[in-house]
Image (cartoon, rainbow, N blue to C red; front, top):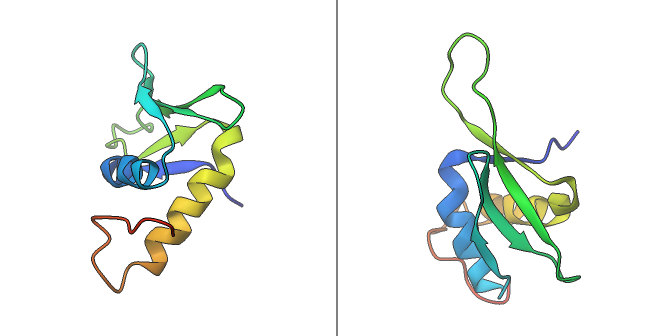
Length: 94
């Protein structure tokens, strides 16, 4: 099951991925919003900071709006297919 999670360490790469596809985004508002991403419909969907896990563990993932599921899934799939080469700069058009 896909849980709409985005690794904290992938946030910068995710924004580069969005840039390479011309998808607008902006900083989140308030404490829990990390990023807002604009959907084709013009609505803004959020990437949220999660509360730390019980036991004082470090935050490892952000939660994303369920309507961003396909975008996040595409990013993760892209990241895995790029693992054989430098994924720090997403190629355009992929």
